[in-house]
Length: 231
Ligand SMILES: CC(C)(COP(=O)(O)OP(=O)(O)OC[C@H]1O[C@@H](n2cnc3c(N)ncnc32)[C@H](O)[C@@H]1OP(=O)(O)O)[C@@H](O)C(=O)NCCC(=O)NCCS
Image 1 (cartoon, helix red, strand yellow):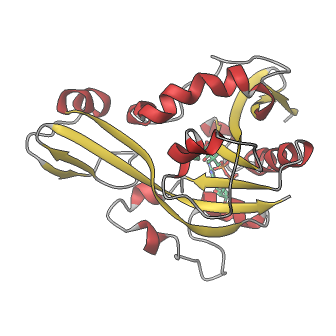
Image 2 (tube, protein in one colour):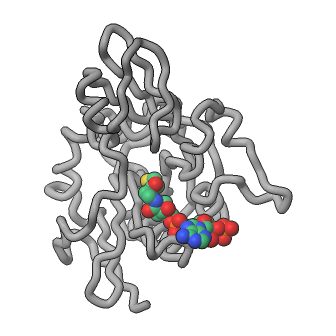
């Protein structure tokens, strides 16, 4: 592996990665409205990961003004109220690597680089509304419980939280409303390939909690977990 990381300002590698997310994840209004600004306004804070000549991962971060209190609205907060005022802190937005590169340590290098960005820009720490990668296996378990699950060796049960912790991050608290996706039954059916014939709660692949249908509209409120890395 010949790994390199570039900021978007250094090298624009957009469009070279397949989507790493379930379709419904692209439909949080706050996030999809803000998203182009990450690359247009905050290009120094977006990373592309390259192995030899292939783009194999990416990460996005955003400088925010943070008062030290974990915000319930997680990512939605970061991409709205979080950018108002003089930034104090770097907030991780997303990290993704191609499936064939998972479990190789690339993810840790991305987190280290994010921390480096915080230092380089004079920000006080790196915070992250972490999307635990195995939570989708337990969509009925409240995040408040899941966040406490540990293995016998003391490490966290969730692989992605574990990677953050190994690098010294601490869990702050869940962000119960980090993302919200609301759409019609038809849209949800198109995104998921499932049918939702009646109102009620449905387990949807890739979702961390059930999607709630009421009056023909489906609402998904995704909980994440706030973590903090010192720099
Ligand atoms: C989140 C993500 C970047 C983490 O990358 P990763 O490569 O899985 O992370 P790590 O290399 O730190 O691995 C974490 C743990 O899972 C294990 N693991 C992950 N993928 C593995 C694989 N394909 N084979 C074997 N082990 C694997 C690692 O060995 C490690 O276990 P350990 O702590 O017991 O050593 C990656 O899973 C991903 O891109 N997921 C899709 C997007 C996403 O959900 N992003 C997070 C929210 S922003």
